[in-house]
Length: 68
Image 1: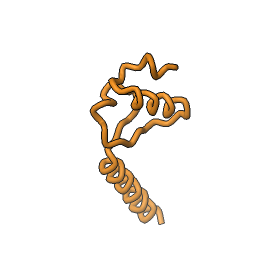
Image 2 (image 1 turned 30 degrees about the horizontal axis):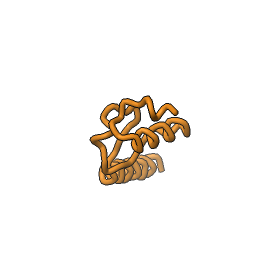
Image 3 (image 1 turned 120 degrees about the horizontal axis):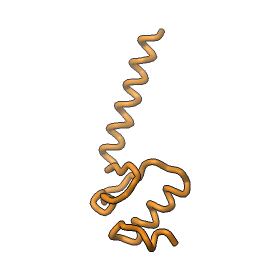
């Protein structure tokens, strides 16, 4: 029901946003970032999310080496 009142321009995107919020997710990964500009969630394109994920794993690996 909240999706109907969303400020997002596309209803299906609003449903995705509301579903993510209900499940307490912080990120939506989509190729359609333009429609999520008014979202309160962190929005990533697949490429940027994978790059961020890779960088965080690399940082953790380097941190583990320092503490060995």
